[in-house]
Length: 393
Ligand code: PLP
Image 1 (cartoon, rainbow, N blue to C red):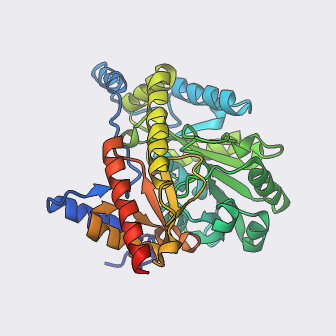
Image 2: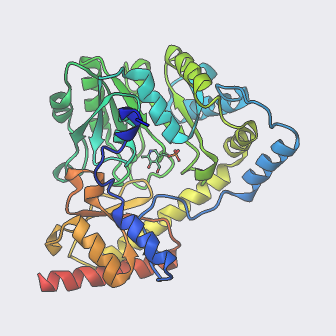
């Protein structure tokens, strides 16, 4: 039977850029001692106290249909957190709970773009961005963020990408895959273009608790932006709750009302006992959250200390998120060739920059998602490999 183009074209046919990841997994399954730094999933399990809250809520009978927009207490807790962190007055009416940041990304595009409209996003990008746009029938189009500008997108590049049917721009800061945090200047430049061209800004801030240098600024807090910004948030990274699928959108009240309507017709909300665990995480989980970001902060420091020893690559400014990006062009290899050869010779899995878009060609991404001992071992192997390659070049 024929399936819709919308679903069969989600990944646009070709390679989805995850070949090295799949090879690393297959080698692990075959019993090889691979250290896998490809995937952005937490190695840290969800805290038992959060799981207890979930368990108790379920045993107490909170197993029926949930409130579709999210429980009042959860929306209030999110609104309070956003108000505190950004200074933008935010209430329950500005918040809808979504199944993860991913569900929120899809819904935000459904809310802003019609069939055939253009949705912009910055490249290099998180793997699901183009599919999230195609999935709602819009046309994905990239705006490059180049290494020579430390991967900070430039306003003129956004202007150049805007066409008559452009409705939105999706940005992500702190940024996956580069680890860059967008500066105030970058965000003000983006905000100007959004206002000038009357566009929606979809701001993916799922790494907002992982900032190692400088500070995270939510562009919703810039003048004139609250009415045209949909912020994507999630507990996945902040509370090591990737499997619980708790995310949200913060935005203008009328947009939120329509997004709630969308949830009624798609997900029908998030399991109520998981929402109770999310309330616990937000209200009682401050220490848990800090402990998680502290672990990544330490891993990043350990990693940078090892990587500094080599002059065969340059580390992209590492300011946030659980990733490091290395420019490996000095070795004479492409990111893909480097990642494949590193996996074969040293049994270390990293993502080729090319997987995230052309601007990250000649780079690799390292996910800091293993413990310090394994990370140290993997990076020592990586330094050794790069030296051998540079000697042979
Ligand atoms: N946005 C970015 C940039 C990500 O890296 C991820 C996950 O890795 C997500 C969104 C989705 O996160 P979740 O759906 O787990 O909230």
